[in-house]
Image 1 (cartoon, rainbow, N blue to C red):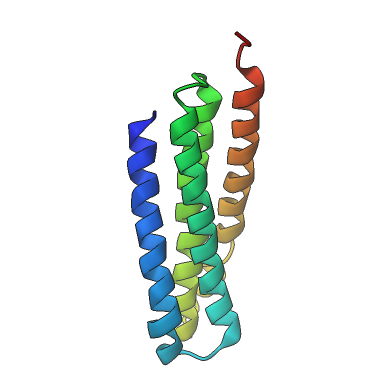
Image 2 (cartoon, rainbow, N blue to C red):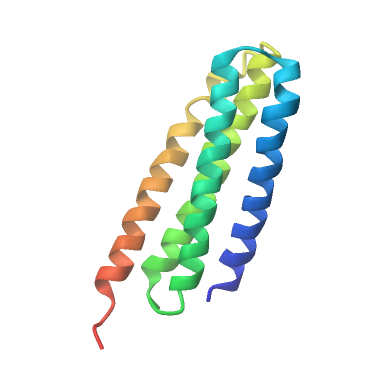
Length: 132
């Protein structure tokens, strides 16, 4: 088992639950803008989905000992930070009507590409494993 991925997955999972609770109870007191709330919720959902993916990678790393399983995990970690992190930041920038939004917005798709790449690396890791 890849212990660092397991620890990171547990941290990101706990954080997504906390952020989800904030989004459901605290954020709605700050804004009622549906687009802003939806963006935040999307960040929380993708963070949790990919935290579970990271748990899977941590467990599979014991069986599939090749560089692609590690690359998959690294892509998920970076994807969570860039995709979900940028959506959280955008939420607060939009609430504050900040002009920085235009610079942060393009980061989100990069995180999405890392998620896609991570899933492809996971598939390659499994396909490259030698049959016993």
